[in-house]
Length: 181
Image (tube, rainbow, N blue to C red; front, top):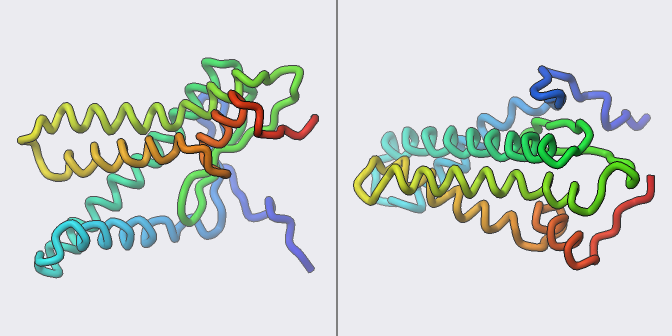
């Protein structure tokens, strides 16, 4: 028997009227971000000793995870600013997913654009602030945080399905279809 896909989502807490939910496999996000951070550390400096690479990978993974949280908060705050009804943040084994269902009579194209732009805007802001604080002479992890967020922020603005840019550009250029509510 097929299980309801929402049955394994538990509410952790509510922030600014937005539920933060978690899947049963969300615990895998720790090992996922550690592994991803370690691969980045290995790619950046392949000649580092294994122990140093694992430590650096843990730091990178934690920074990427916190960046993911900051991105989600950007969506929530932007949604509040543009009047989007409450949605939810879903913490999965990989990334946080922001969702909301909005009646067309309430949510205009500008509501969708504003809410969708909040995540990449927060990501780019975090990246730029980290790079400014780094100033070319700061700690290496700050440079990584800045560069990673700028690259990811730009990537998220591309008109690729499932990315924020798909919603933004789709609403602006009219190629994204919203289901009637």
